[in-house]
Length: 419
Ligand code: HEM
Ligand SMILES: *[C@@H]1O[C@H](CO)[C@@H](O)[C@H](O)[C@H]1NC(C)=O
Ligand SMILES: *[C@@H]1O[C@H](CO)[C@@H](O)[C@H](O)[C@H]1NC(C)=O
Ligand SMILES: *[C@@H]1O[C@H](CO)[C@@H](O)[C@H](O)[C@H]1NC(C)=O
Image 1 (cartoon, protein in one colour):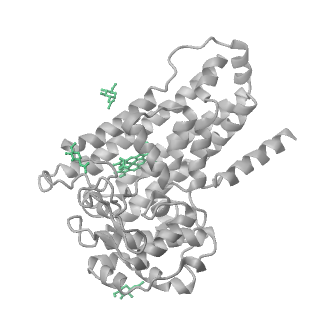
Image 2 (image 1 turned 90 degrees about the vertical axis):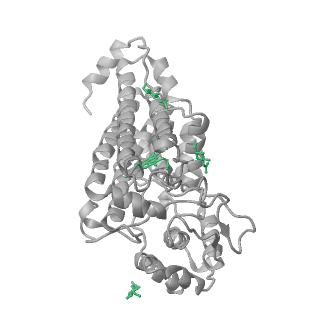
Image 3 (image 1 turned 60 degrees about the horizontal axis):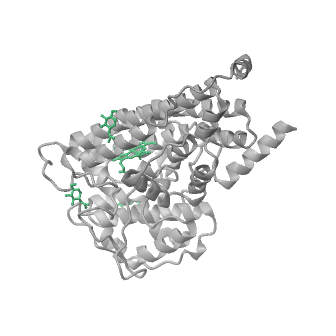
């Protein structure tokens, strides 16, 4: 009976926060086509790479009619529309390269994009929730969700590196799904002070973080640093903290003032911020401000889970007051796995952004930091690296060093259980 109850509460949480047990925050079975009325959007988005490379996209956008989004009926249709309009908009702005972005997004793009975004609670720019969470399909529908059987719905120039970048990110995000189950289980267990379940939930999160790091390694096989840095990166660049669009982008028919919006980045991954919130990792000042701002780019239900976790009585204080060495160790293992994931990420960023950015051909170019949502223009991307290191250090600082009083009887009872 109690087990049934738990299962029901867990299901209610999965529904409320739009989490799937199998794929976490990924959109399940994304649609790949819209009602026929939207054919013109789909034709451009489906052929985007070709239209950018032949410099035809902007002209075709100028001929586009202003479509009403009212024929979009459900969440998955809205997500596909947001994804398609996002890809077309990025292609439109950056078609002529990073030195001559469009300053104005034409009404036929801007207005429907604005309206669709408002219905979804997402900003009118290509987000991680679009390009990673909702941009996938199975090649063989009966096959597994593995790299050889996954393809993008829409692509930017960059060939296999484009597919690799988004698909590996997707697989890393999918590896977070069991961790999210762990988070929800810990959340429930805290309410009834069920120490054993808290510990089990934490073990799940740790295992999930380790799997995320293992999956991350696929990046090296599927993404070429020069192709990533020189070609793909520009198309995910936004119009905030971007010296090429210092005032932002004007959305014609929507507003008379340009709008500032950050480009897409896995900093918009809700999973990582959920783990931080659960573990009470504190990011302050500019670092914290940036990460908090990234929540505006997440689907509202996912953002809600982070916010719910942030206002609960804290797990860290709970552990400090319950004096179980095993629980404390489970918590610390989790924090350590998070530090290791962030260290691995730091090294990857060095390889894909800092090293190609220091290439003599591009050094001195004020734009070499563009494409990250942060201002990475400091020497050798120093701002970017300082940010990532401070996030990593803050994670490390969550480790519980003071040894709590040991509740030996409880720890022995837990050890006798098998799970
Ligand atoms: C080649 C692969 C990758 C590159 C070049 C890269 C680059 C970056 C950059 C430049 C930032 C700085 C902030 C920003 O621009 O928004 C960042 C932040 C971040 N990235 Fe990545 N990233 C990569 C893959 C991933 C993957 C697969 C994940 C998976 C979860 C991830 C998660 C994050 C997170 C969570 C942040 C925010 C800082 C933090 O919480 O540690 N990144 N990344
Ligand atoms: C993309 O454009 C090319 C050249 O105009 C055309 O041959 C091709 O049929 C188009 N593909 C799609 C999917 O629209
Ligand atoms: C980025 O940082 C550099 C060096 O710190 C600074 O000179 C530049 O003005 C900044 N650019 C933006 C767009 O904030
Ligand atoms: C992070 O910690 C390392 C090692 O303790 C230290 O060398 C570095 O200065 C710290 N960096 C930041 C940005 O806090």
